[in-house]
Image: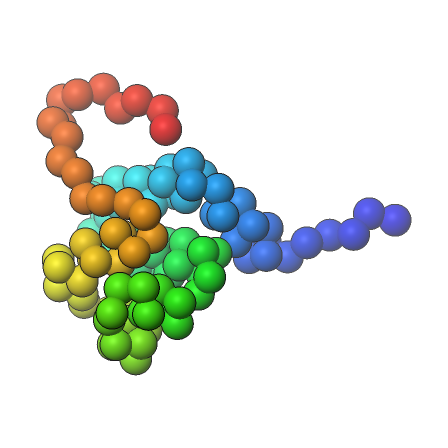
Length: 107
């Protein structure tokens, strides 16, 4: 009998891959541009952080307060741009800007 994995467990396993996580975050950010649902983007950041060792590890790496990090990345979080940048850097990514009319290249 085939053993089934929970969706969240499978997602977190996939997000350990740098390229997969990059695509996941990029899509979440693109969706934010469409619907302004910041909670979905913050959830994506939390998922990647969890896959890469958890928020406690990220807090230590970024020197951000753990409780503040949890709050910032919650569904009702409203982190400042410098917090998002610090989180992304801690996860191994950076903010970037591309022209709107430039065709999107696959990650």
